[in-house]
Length: 433
Image 1 (cartoon, helix red, strand yellow):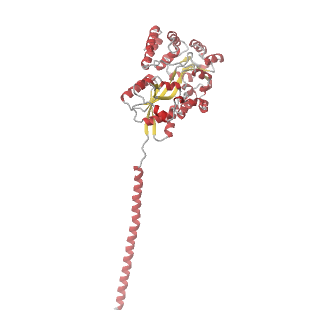
Image 2: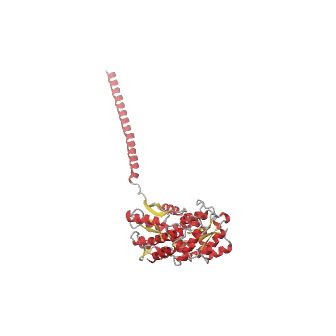
Image 3: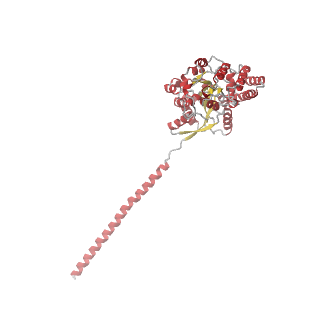
């Protein structure tokens, strides 16, 4: 009996131990599973947290500007975009035909007011656009940024000042100049050209004299297509429209000369720089950007830059250039100002000058060593003389209408050689309005 009692007690004790061990195993499983669940919840929270704190996207600033035959504008935009992360400038490339671009912008501004934030404007449009209420004054922004009128090209600032308010900063100033092949033109003739003391008739004689040398096909190329470029060239040939009859007669003589292209009446800036930089022309009337193309390996230029020199035009070169303005209807005026301030400032203007050959509108850069080293034209005697002999186009609140009347009348005369008196009368009447 005692023996069975001992066995029973032993079995009971063993059972107790097994149950206790089994209970410990369940507790261990619960303990190991619980942290796993906690970790999974933490990972889920960690993955969801960044999504809730996503950074706001950069505001897009739309920049309506003409196509650039150099890499400068694209590089300047890229530099601005890389300089901060609040704004991203999108370049809306417009036509290089000034009249068409003018009409495109007016249509946009009068219809879809906020389609563009920053505008590139020909100097002759600023008064018209400001008067129409399409531009935002920038006097306050300039004052807050500590910018003075004197920091910038005077002609550009004057062009963008309407009724005492400043509406623009310079994109790039411009003036018409004469390019010539220094490896073809004699030293004596070159000296005459550089001085600026010569006439269009003398230029014609040189064009005839040198045509055919070094593989050239024509003597002189310039802008004679019916667009703003024709108004500019007519302004130069006629000495600010003060010598209309003689100046237009000279233009016709050039049009029909054997040393100008047969299709000269279709020439714009692009056709002009192509003819000169590929070695087809001895002389070329164009803007400063054309010199920058000679240094650009991607431009297609075959004439070495060292074979090119610059001189004033006989009666002086027309003042031109482009301005930067804020669309009054923009919903991103703050960002638009930041971009304009950058592009018209020392960094943006240095890019435009060194990479595109443009004349800097920020005055301090005219003495900047990097700019001068990259743009030899700024140091040339002929170019410096050209800066001193500029002439203006007609100043009027209805410039587009006036310019269009001039283009039509002059082109009609140049196309036929008939109606000189009628052309003179039309131009005089347009300017007098």
